[in-house]
Length: 68
Image (cartoon, rainbow, N blue to C red; front, side):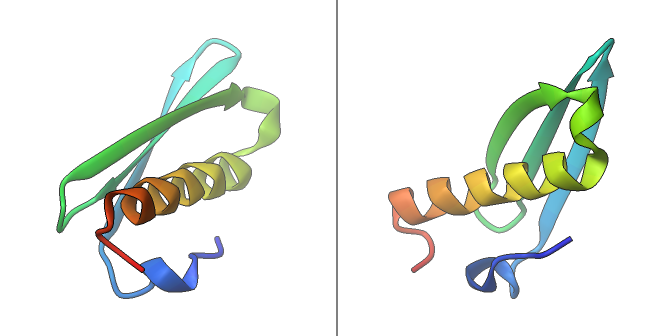
């Protein structure tokens, strides 16, 4: 999984939860305790769902001014 450059020195926890044909991907930045979630079809694949959750976390951290 490709981690964005802005998150490479941060500890990120990513979890996947199955709900039938839907998967909820949650990513959390350990330092700031910022957590985001996305949902997607099971057919999208684990790697894509994890990448999308991490990208959303990056967006939220930038919006809050936590990272550059």
